[in-house]
Picture (cartoon, helix red, strand yellow):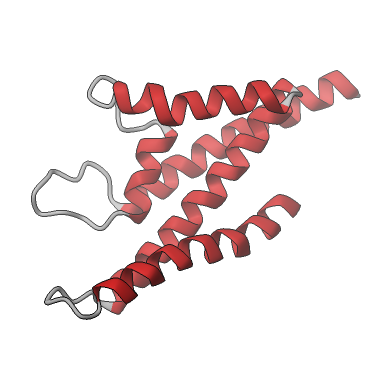
Length: 141
């Protein structure tokens, strides 16, 4: 709970700075960015960063070491997942989280809605948090 309380404002600042920068750069262009799209993207990106942080903290609690956790999660998020995007289903945390903040495109088939992506990533986080709590209680009780 304490990690979520700290992560939400920081994730809001990080996501907000990226979205604000895009808005400032695109304001003189012919393409108009609607304010409700910006707000949905900001909320989705903040939620994605928060849930990913909670998921990584749970994996860190399971392994009891930060370096292996960092190697495993960064390896998955930046190497395994992009290389196997066509093979793995869209229900893994990074792919489901992608739908939380990306606006639906008319050029591609959107498999998940933002709400479904949020639910799936939240489910992954809750599962890992629950497993971490159970193992923590068994190891240290």
